[in-house]
Length: 371
Image 1 (spheres, rainbow, N blue to C red):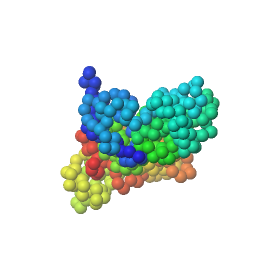
Image 2: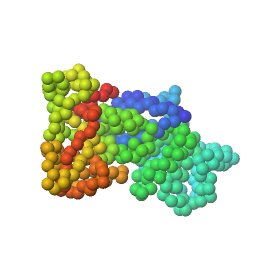
Image 3: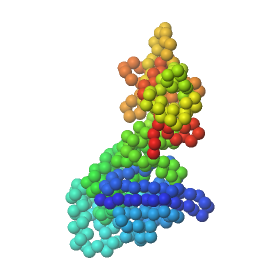
Image 4: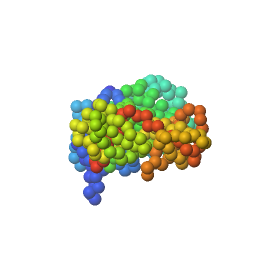
């Protein structure tokens, strides 16, 4: 097991385009860190710099106690799997796994021993005599990973490796990756554009935007306590909605209003808002669809609670969500219970999160949580 430490990493190109900005990251021994962010946010550039395929403009990269910025790529003990990986079609799987060791000038007897041992350790010995054409897409992906592990890397870099797989195979591929990584205990960085993949596979998730690391934490930490609106809005489906509210001083408490109803601010949250000077000021409230429950209003039924009309329905992770507009903003809400809700149905809106996600109106930074 090894630890990767990145300090103040920059990558600027000749046209002054900055791919990485003061990037910092420290892994733990043997963990899998999923790095998520949109296309061209610097994820792949980061991996290429760690691997030595591209140079940084400034900053330091440490692998355990060794500074590797100027180390030859072949000497870094880093393995990388690219988005468009392939196996050599004219070789059987044994020779595919052995090929990298041959390039490193390992003697034939040692190559045979290492390939055989890693294949047994990872449970793929049955594949060694097969040709790549005999494999399913997931088996091909698995053997590409095994080929990387044969080199006994200290760090494994995966540049969106399941992007070329059919959608129906990607979960199985992620499960295979997790199984192999846990057996080998190789510290791994996994890059993806999809938060669902990052949350599923990562021990920790690192969120990137425009070359910067916005936040890193366990999937639950990122979900529960996003440090800004960018992280909150990007994480997981269905996506979060945002609405502007005002924190108002009442006689003996703070209060706010949304979905047409007053909400008393809990004492612990009130103390933070008072301390940070948000009384009688407007802030942004983040609302996840799972924070709202909706109930259909039957024909002829009267209701004084806030209501809306369902625009459309959508399903995520086996749950059904109803989408509606309220006071100029769009929201989604979890549909619970057996009663069917259809488009154009009238619904009652019930907000049920006692600890809201509040953000500064100007900076977008989280108000209730500290970095």
